[in-house]
Length: 198
Image (cartoon, rainbow, N blue to C red):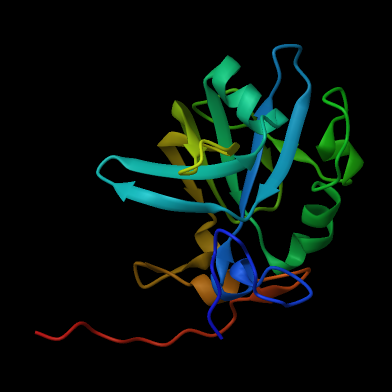
């Protein structure tokens, strides 16, 4: 099949775009509001975009709490979402008022970060402490604006020691989850190696 992406005339029950850009890592973003309210939300439009310096980015549909808190407070934490905490991850995706603490809502505990104010998710095997760099409005050719891309420089990285073997991170052992299309997710529990030619 082929369809015009602008008209979105695919004829399917749901837009297939997110079902074929897969798997997408989930950025589980924790932040703090100016009033001290904790916020936690998953973003499947998320990725690392640079290693020198280390920069991550997440895209927010509208100006959601994570984006606002990152801009106003200048900091956020990206926690690795794993199979062991997928229930809490799902609960933290609920659409609630800014005064609601999603950690409490999802029954999750916090642990303090070392270099930034927002806490991390207790039990997350990896987290990145980030300083907000900029927010880029994502305008289409027609000028329509619905998404904002938030960039953060990673200033601190935590990896649970039990997932480091022979000087390398055992990604599969952490069972990170990734977003697919619709309401579907995937678990990374098997890896294979392929070396570049030359």
